[in-house]
Image (cartoon, rainbow over all chains, first blue to last red; front, side, top):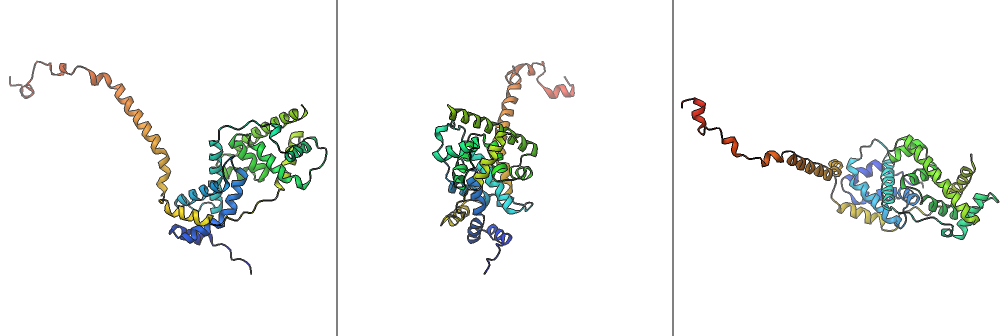
Length: 195
Length: 98
């Protein structure tokens, strides 16, 4: 038997009437969406569950402001993205990135990608994900967010603009700036590897 | 596409293919969040203006200090000469009956 579709408008009505069961159902329904955003933008040393909790609490406190102009999951996504970026901005210093910071697998993946010597295997995927997160950690929070959404979540410029509230030109500028910084990082790592 | 773009696209494509962790809420998470949300006071649409409250207070205080500074000379001026007209009885002066 197929699961019944989730009645989001009905659930929101009940949440507005302070129904705790409906609040719980709403959290469970939106958790996969929120945790996916949290995991892809997770700042260092912040537990994903704590950040997810902050996002849901913001959602409940601002529920009266939701006008229904955009689908509710989009509205929650925006809260999640802005909460993550606030957390990233709060972490002002980024540690210097060194070849020695990479695990053996990450170093191997990076070396393979840089030298194009052999095709990477699916087993390298986890190491690649960790590596990408470490590289993105070197960027400014806003630039990191744009690259994350563009290259990993494969969102369009228009979608990023809607999610962040930044205009499309600003999104393109941030993407360009972030790629230049990443390129510089790659070059530095390459020279360190050779030395 | 330059060398870096090619390498970066290859790396991100590989990262995207990594298996995702389970996305279901941990046991008790939804109940805890719902309870905390219920305990928190409800916030209305006017809460939007709260973020400007402190800045508004600072601006108002700055205007207050500026107003006192600009009028300092008037406030501290010798007030005695305004009575030194030679006439003390304003009713007499008004009716011109002296």
